[in-house]
Length: 149
Ligand SMILES: Nc1ncnc2c1ncn2[C@@H]1O[C@H](COP(=O)(O)OP(=O)(O)OP(=O)(O)O)[C@@H](O)[C@H]1O
Ligand SMILES: [Mg+2]
Image (cartoon, rainbow, N blue to C red; front, side, top):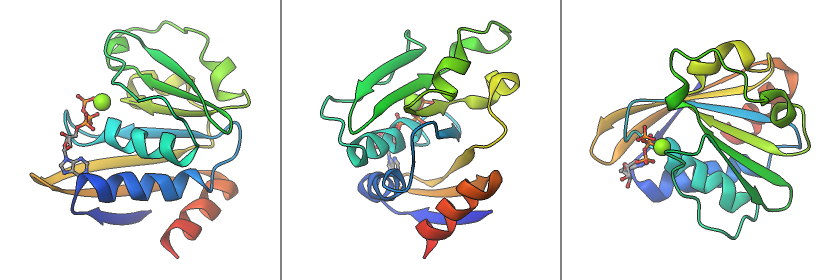
């Protein structure tokens, strides 16, 4: 487990951008954290790092949004799937050729791949956040080591 402090929105974006450069097709990044902690902000940084040109919006009513960058980029916000056991074809995203980021991932815990990078964002004050990174499997452990070095 690794911890990174971010003091501004831009810093969160740049951490995510740096992370994006370490990811490979099929990777899954999960984001947890209270409302307004910065999950979508982090996602914008990932998209930027992957060369996505379109603006990332918060997919409030859409569970999954797809973007094109250097590879496909899937942005899920599964907040609305709380208490739902519905499988909306997650495997196609998780085992596909794109990178998937999932806000509120614990609501679809049973569908998540075992190997993933979990990021939990805590609100410290208005502009300060703490990001806690928990990698599963050798690839994501390597990713976190590189990010921290
Ligand atoms: N260090 C920081 N990192 C990220 N966001 C920050 C930071 N400081 C301030 N902010 C602000 O916090 C807000 C984060 O909003 P964002 O939509 O990213 O949160 P979220 O976790 O996706 O919320 P939701 O649960 O509603 O989806 C933005 O308004 C952003 O400008
Ligand atoms: Mg959000």
